[in-house]
Image 1: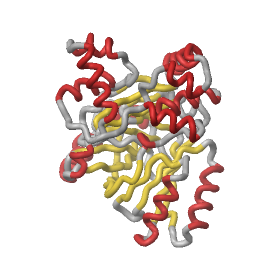
Image 2 (image 1 turned 30 degrees about the vertical axis):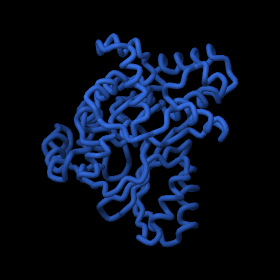
Image 3 (image 1 turned 45 degrees about the vertical axis):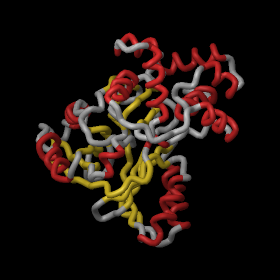
Length: 337
């Protein structure tokens, strides 16, 4: 089990993924060599990993479509289906769940037609799958890339934000895409390492890394093996929310640290919320808080998620430790849940 310092280091890198150990030493009041050793252990033990990716935000505004797809499997074939789904780049996440479906996956394509086609030709056709049901995402309010551990004090958070280059509107360039690919699974790679891979001068590479770090269309994600580090379960709540309550409900969910993803969806419920839980009792408390604050909300359904098999392209073992990465090159935009 990780301790408080491990969580502080992870939280710090969620805010500023390329902060130097010397800078972080001052923020955490911990020796830089200790921080470096802890981070190396977390990585080598496959309990922590990183991702850098193009969020595809401009394409989203031009009509990109994401969808959550329920999958039903033949009895005894679920593991085979998971392996096949996880190998496909356009499928960013694969989750085991409860109820009438065995799994749900998150995909993204440029259009409704292409989403429908992908589900039919590349998901429903997999041997061992007997049925699918698609829920299109109408609007995403927040996702996993913005989720934080909240292991740091407000002063520490502010210090790290001040050390990071401010976010700005950076033009997309082919050179920046090359940098993103080089940093895709390790946002902390040195400029020298990236220079050796790209063949460009180290000064240009360092400049481009800084530009990518500040670009408003780039996401830097630090994630961890949630089951090994204290989160034993997850759940999806399907809510029916009145339009007049929608903004207030979403604002409340944004401030709920268990909530990692929230989107308007098509179907019998109109709002889906993914929660990370330390135990299932937390779900009862969260539901009570929501329905007490907003009596008109209807909880249409709840799915328990005992295992996340793939998250943001990273394939995970049964214990949620990192196994391998499937490059994120198959979708119009990327959402991390």
